Length: 214
Image (cartoon, rainbow, N blue to C red; front, side):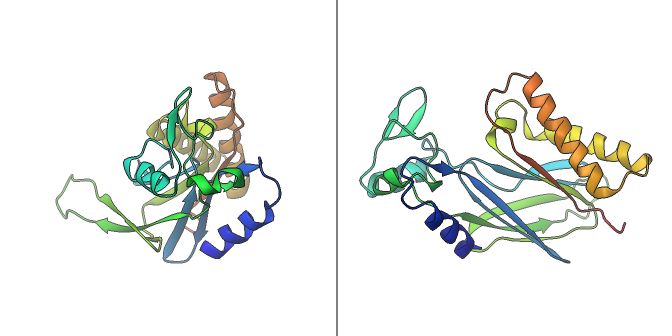
């Protein structure tokens, strides 16, 4: 997965002012793999609750600030914290003009373990530890995963997004809409809702239905 990010970044060589974020998920029979670079985000809906699987790479994160400064860059407040007063993300694909200032294309990966309380009425939790490899053990209560750019998350909290997507998918299931179509419809509803809430940024949303076959 790291190689995929590296190859994509290399394709943007020579396009100094071109850059993008990326959040990627690989879905296996028993695991999910997630990697993120920038401020796009992945949220997993499990058992009626939403869990953020990535963290937004922002220049005001303490460890990211330290990394940027160690590379010779600075975080300046210019309509919010920005690398060298220009980029509001600390990691990105492309944006090579800031590579010497610490903006890198290395994805951050996570290891996610299920923590089951075993007590009646208690909700299972997900414990997240930053690591080199992303491994999310799938659970029978996994419903769907949302991958989206910051245009969505800037105007809607994670739980509100999960709740609306869950409602759309449930309604489609009741109408016996094919899963792929249902996911596209739910993604469009999220985009429309974000625009109605005042988003002026571009928005990309992908919903992965994890309940197939159940």
